[in-house]
Image (cartoon, rainbow, N blue to C red; front, side, top):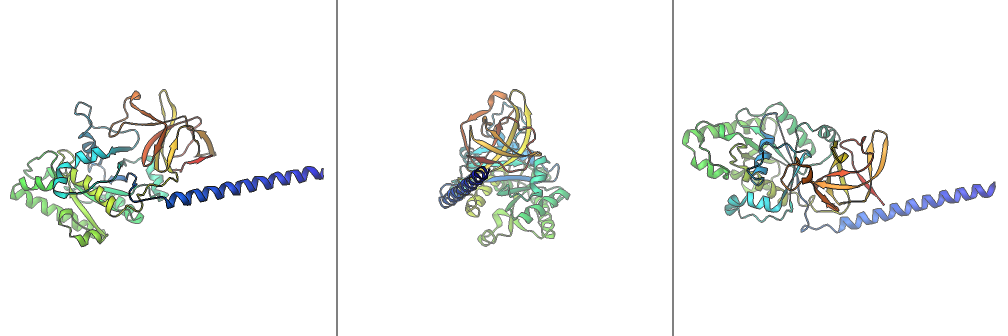
Length: 368
């Protein structure tokens, strides 16, 4: 009897020792990964689009996507994963015209944009204060100024300390606006008549005033001096039109600039896995899938991943990793691209068994 007890105790000791060793190994690995980060290896910045209902958030995204989703495809895309991935070449081709004057050297691998139409996951991501996004676009309707949810989004961004850009959308609604399709906004403004410019200026200064009331200093982005750029509490305003596309280049380039100038420290890619569940849904032919956002690190097919469910943690093997093609929608089943491994930051669909009860907004770990 005594021997049995001793044996059990020894087993327990061994287990505890093993666990300690594993933990030590993991922490050392994580430390080494953190030390290996460099400014040359950046990940995609994660951009979130926020704003009041009907200010044109999704339209703006559509505009960015449509420039390279062929014209033949049905417009007005609502993606299934709330995350759209833009490759570097997309960003370069989109901002080409503006970049002739700006001469900005882009070295981001791409950009990941999340649309926030009341994604359920976002409410609980917000409440957990998860700093999911690196930089945000706050869309304000130039015709209506700040509205209730705009102010709510503003408060959220400022509490989290997220840098953001304000898009003054719907400039094409100014009186007698001459449309210049997809041009940089300064070129478009040069084409307008004096009356239109006056209306634009008065509306823009109204928006500036309302932002000031909320305690936000802002200025139209090309009127910002260098000291405003370094003085981080100034928010750039970008006049855009999601319908005709003026100013869309400006906002893309501005986001890239902010990411590279101000955020490069947090954009250094790191091999420690950082991964959050966006949503869980059933898909014909695939069963229950989980949409996750991989921020840092790798996810590989065949990894054993730990998910949080309502009944406690579960371990499931990742049977497949799917992404939509870059800047494309996820309508067509066969269009998913299968991956053996995923490097962050990217939105991915994970296929596995027993994922029905996984909760949105929870982190994902990989074991072994």
